[in-house]
Length: 231
Image 1 (cartoon, one colour):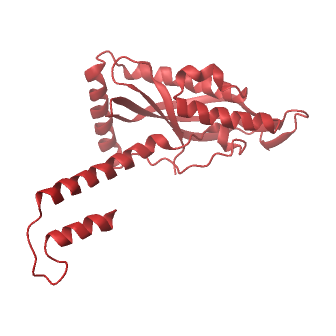
Image 2: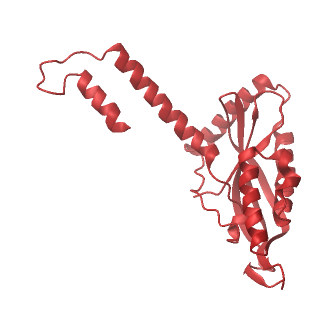
Image 3: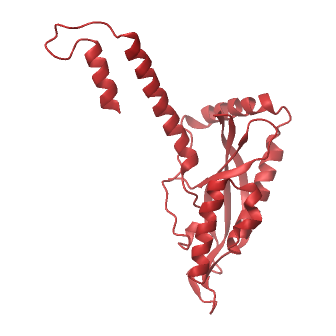
């Protein structure tokens, strides 16, 4: 992609061929370059929401899902807070009653519901808070656990903090990412014998997870669209 843009610029500036046909950048070149750059921006932004989910369910190795890690926003705490505040202000333009505390409390409820559904290998109970893609992926992973006669236990979950790290709007959708810092007992057992296959019944593990929620702009219900871990 970069080579295409570079080649266009060089040809437009007369650096191609024998140098006798040089000229300024044409209007169509400018329009095409702008379109390509915008496409690249949209593609990179959209990748955040298209990562397959990972989470406490994958830490024990039972789910078998592998994805690139989450990269927190760059620029330090001050820049990050400024970006979050700007994003939330955009959300409030179509939902004046949006409250950050109420939102993170609701995220906490979803967190426990999803973990419980995963441990039961039945994602139908949380269908209402998952996007179609997320529901499909988690349901398939739960199906694999059942087929292998394994149960991934998630016990003594203790969430230490829930913080908004990103907020933005795109293509008529609100997006907000929250960071969960928590610990729990995460282990997988054989369904028949109860033998621990991985993890520990007694040694808690700590983790950071980034959960992204989305909804159509306005006062609509939020749904979980991505779960990622930091790099």
